[in-house]
Length: 102
Ligand SMILES: [Zn+2]
Image (cartoon, helix red, strand yellow):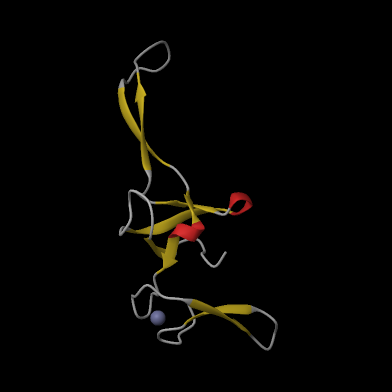
């Protein structure tokens, strides 16, 4: 997965298609990403027993990373990423549009 925490991404598929958001959390084991304000699911709750507040709670559900595109912080465009291997064997993500390391 080329997406990391706090990346800005564009949603490509689903009901939130076209939205941009920030990555809150990566869930690597099933290749999904939790995004701020994307893929909201409403849960209806009733006031009973220990729960005092009734109403609708909105909760974000993870989105598959294949439905997302990374937005380059340098050129601010939806960009394809290439991986550059540095001399010290660490890897960097490079934007194919502006050639900047992200
Ligand atoms: Zn760029």
